[in-house]
Image (cartoon, rainbow, N blue to C red):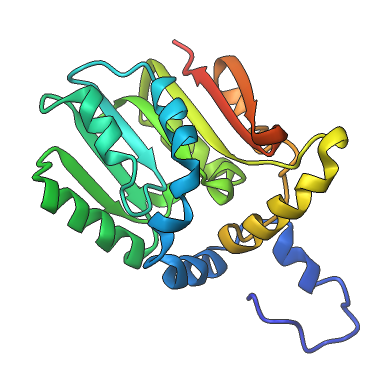
Length: 225
């Protein structure tokens, strides 16, 4: 599906891989990145902290960590929800999920449930109080994945998403950095201007923050009651 076509009469077929998310491409990317993923994202930890703060979590809350990766958000989430709360981490990459599982075990977090599936196919137990999408561009550009998450959230639940975006016109040179990062972490460049556009109609009270010269966004919203 992702290989260049043999039929040269269809010169634009290869281009389509950049127009929609590709699960097979994403699995390849994160298979190779799993061992160094935590180091690669170290500089972005203040963005993670801000995104989690905007969830307004309370002790006992149930939160969905969508595209949880190696579980880097678990510690911050645990500090807010406590032992009475719970985390459901959803991740399709087996290599990333194994590291998330090891992280939970090493820290003795018994309230972490991990789901190995694509987000659009994930069967999530019970309704949750909040959902976090941290640097999950492919998921943000998959309407069925967003709809599935929203179906498993309580009315009034908060959703926060963060990630890369194209810089505004006045900061266009920064898009070289965005391009390089996106080539390593996404299977599609579609929607990088407004990555949250598929989420916008699903939530109310949408608020946008931009950081690092407009190359990173954080949006927050509420599931309608």
